[in-house]
Length: 281
Image 1 (cartoon, rainbow, N blue to C red):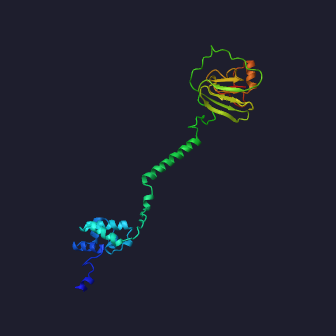
Image 2: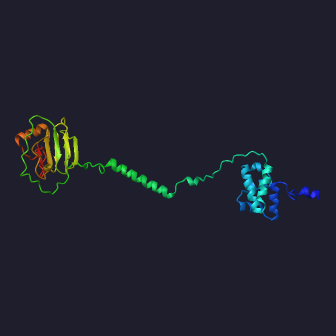
Image 3: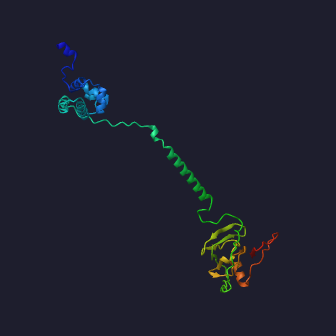
């Protein structure tokens, strides 16, 4: 009889693990079923049955697992906890190990929708940069063309009742061009270098550089340009819808103011005058 007890240590269980194992076997339950009911890893349940509490994360885990095991097999969990506390005695509490995370490298890869949206945004940014630096679409500048824009079919401004412009000062000075309405204007020097080209808004002003070499103006609406010399009006470049090219240096404007010269056809050598184009010396 005593030999049978030695061969079967769970016949009279002494430890908490042996008591839980005996209760499980009495109900003919597999340890895997206890793991399924309690959601405790199988290796931890095996450690409890073998009283191998050192392999558990901590004393707190050992107490909780043992009580859950007792509930699963219908044992007295309070008594089990009390006996286990006696078994553990003064065993120091070990901090629980840091949680382990199962990183799935595939989760770091952006979804197909996000990748497509990013590609679309990148293309739109490139298009915007190209339009900004390659065109004047967003900067309000004049179109980059060498010839004057098409002449608008607009009635000429009636200046019959306008007061005669005041004579300009005899001495040289600052030439200023003021837009009386929306008008395209180009200013070049004697060497053909472009000093200014833009579709000016109403009221916009341009001061011709005083050191420019014989600056010349080209526009299709001279009636929309007010010419000032040192702040005083000088005769306009033209009075209707006509392409005009005229010198606007201070000396040329002073000469026009004194002589009352009117626009004359261009006299460039080897070039026939255009239909209604006027050149002013």
